[in-house]
Image 1 (cartoon, rainbow, N blue to C red):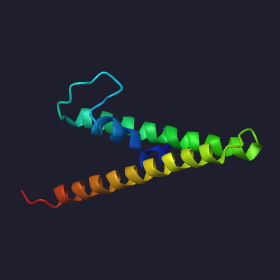
Image 2 (cartoon, helix red, strand yellow):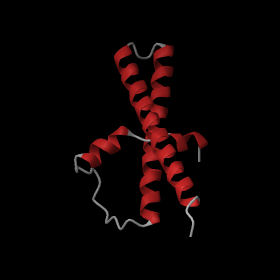
Image 3 (tube, rainbow, N blue to C red):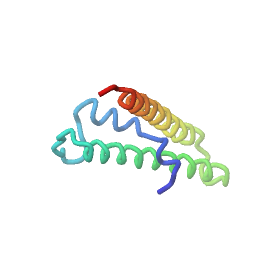
Length: 105
């Protein structure tokens, strides 16, 4: 797995699940660690796809295969927003982990 994929998540996830309009058949979410991990990994893979699409759009534009700067900007912005969201989620997860580790039992 690409290490860079741990730093990216998709804003489409927010749109899809924030509006309660899942594209895929809804799975039963039992709140277990496995289901949370699966969701996180799906979000990471989706963001990695955005990063790859943006890189591909940059290469096509540089080679002259695409003359649309608008499409290039859209692909780059999607990738950037997905990356920012992933970093924010990662920071919150690390903060929660530190809080749990500092708890006294």
